[in-house]
Structure formats: C-alpha cells, structure tokens
Length: 327
Image (cartoon, rainbow, N blue to C red):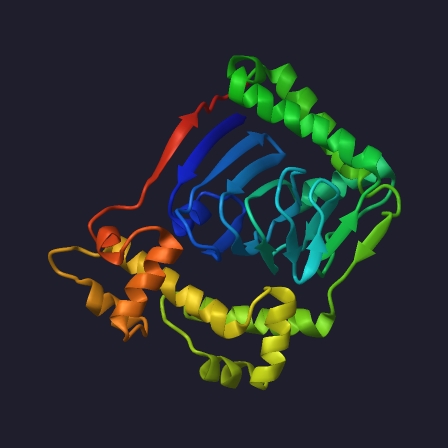
C-alpha cells in the first residue's frame, strides 16, 4: 500500500507527534516563531520521512523496537551534532539501534530525512543483496559514506518525494511503487556493502551517562526538574553532568532544564481553559516565580506573550494528503 501526507505545525510537541517510528521530544533552543513540517511516505515495506524546522533545536528521539532506521541531513541543512559528534549534512548517515535514544542538536534551520525497514526485512535484504546477514548495531553510529553511495541514495529519494508531491496519480501505480521501493532498498543496502570510509562512535561512558539523564526526564514528562535532584537521581557530581551535556547537547544541564520548563509551561498554556486558568498559576507551577522575567523570556523564545498563548489553540493540520491502496 502506498500512502503519503504532509503536515505542518507551529508547536514543537505537536510536530514531534507527527514523526513516525520514533518517539520524539523537540525543544527549540533559539528564539522566534517555531515553524515545522514533516512529510511521510509509505512504499509498503519501506518507510520514508522528511522534516524541517526553522529554529535551532534539541531533538531527542527513541526509535521503535521493531524497525531499523537510517537518518541523514540534507545538504541545505545547518550543521548539527549527534551525541556530541559533528554531523555533516549531505555526507554522513546515522545508524540507530532499535529502541535506543539519541540526542541531536541543530545550529540553525534543519532539514532531515529518514528511511526505515523492519528488522526482519533488513536482515533478509542484507543477506540477499550483499551476501551476509547484518543485524542492527547495539550502539549509535555515524557513518561517512563514499560520495557515489550517497549520490545514488539521494537521487532515488528525491525522485520519490518529487513524484509524491507533484504527480501522486503516477506514484500510486503498482509498478512505479515496486520500482522505487526496490531501488531504494538496493541503494540503502549498498551503504553497508563496503567498509565505510570512516566511522565514529561516542564515548560509551558518556553515552551511558546521557542515557541516564534522559531516562530521568522520560520518567517525569510533565514535571519540572532541577539540577540537584537530577544529579542525585543519576548519582554523578554536577561537574560531570555539565561536561557531558556540554559535549552532547551543546549547553549546560541547567540551560536545558530551563528550556524544558519553558516548553512545559507553553504546553500547559496551550491546553488550558482561559476562563479557569491564568498565566501566573501556570508559570509558578513550573518554577517561574519572577513573572516579569518569565514573560520577557517567554516572548523572546516563542515570539508572543504567554497571555496570547493561553487564549489560542495549537496549530496542527494536514496541508496535503493523498493515501491510496494498490493491488
């Protein structure tokens, strides 16, 4: 079955909910009016996604337990880091283990893409196409591919998105779907046929520490957290956590926690009832007791005062959708 849809969102949480095969937390780092979109394409066995955000952000994602995901940045994207490692747009690909969490930090407008197969399909196609069984890695990897490998994958995915956006009546034809899917699978497997030109792997200790930090956040999704209780829960000194976050997230844990509290406050304002809730109550709930400073910081980060957020709903709607079944 072929299906494709594009969504837009002006709220990071709503945008995160539209991304398939991963559980995502998005925290905008730079100030401004957040705008994002994501396009999803299903070609049967193979799933594709393309997303973009206009602001620098932290992107914390946990992949599905049953899918093998390869992701990359488009050449037009701003630079980024993944688990603290520089990630070069248009050249590097990220290989993600099923069920594992990884943090991305972008430094400007970000355009990303991802391709995924089930674990079973990946094992079967790797045996068929490159003559050996490959199982997903048990750690996060960044691979730098030869230009020819990346170029072929780029041409096929661009053709798929182009047909989906401009000629959906063509791409729903069974033979077109089969040809695109088979070509993309072959190009994806070719990325693993040879030894990559280079491969980088983050410090295992740093990755473990960051995973503990993220686990504490995951256990408290709607609750404001502070540095002392985080350090106590993880069992590390504040200095160690600061070094880890500086390398992996590009900021101190306090700055990240402050941004997280601000986003939690925004989420609460978006779902609040103006006749029953007020800005003061919501701000203090998330630890902002200097309301003047809160209002200024909120407006700088989100482009509007908190009272405006309180009186409107989040914007999340499909701008195009053309699903279709094929025989």
